[in-house]
Image 1 (cartoon, rainbow, N blue to C red):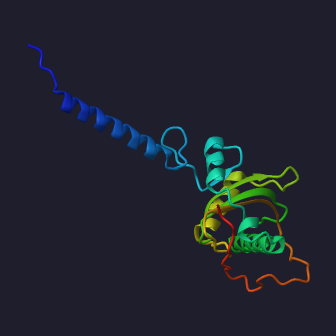
Image 2: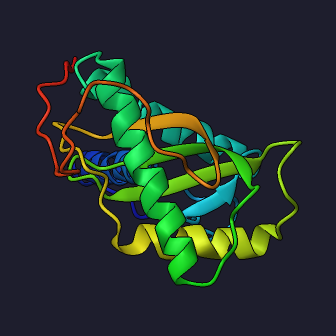
Length: 188
């Protein structure tokens, strides 16, 4: 004898299955920056690795440092230079010689200035340095460093760095104490 499932129970089962499926999709869409398998995007990586996750990261951190600095190039440059000087000092304190290293950097920041990810690539004329050593250095640096700019949302900056970092030569003094500055940056 064949037992039939009542229509109400069948509708409930279908509804619960559809709800579960949509919940799973929603959870998958919540940006975890996962690589194929169970590997999570590392906080420091080479530009060109993890391409899909890197592109997703760029989308999630689409506000630029220049925008957060209210489109003031001097302020943005000063803040960027401040971070590079801190990197240079941190390297010296940890007996790492960065002199001659030239890199492209893409830094992803939370509103409080915490660096969540740092992607980099050595420039062709850079001094030779092992990428494992440089990645380990960047990973240690971003653990405790806070970028000296508070914002209303996530932001990023793509720029270059050449070590050693030289002082800025201009007549303006942009937040010379290096302290955090709250931005009224424009957001959508």
